[in-house]
Image (spheres, helix red, strand yellow):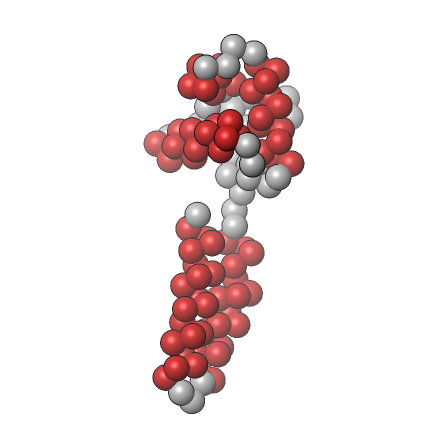
Length: 108
């Protein structure tokens, strides 16, 4: 990820955290100091291709962050089963650490 992509992704995350509407290309360009909507579009498309955002072509303010919770469910389930099946405290602690790590992926 380039520095510009990281900056615009951070701005998108911030804007979505304070409201339900994604920023417009003009707002992103103003924030980044970019005058060209084409350049903003290229950044958005690169983020979408990398899976950092979801974007509907031709729809204004349609940028969304992907839902990562479904990716973590199998890891959490497996780790929880390990905790329940384990006979040692050490193994239970390792399994609990896996649950926490998987849950971090959901929160980010």
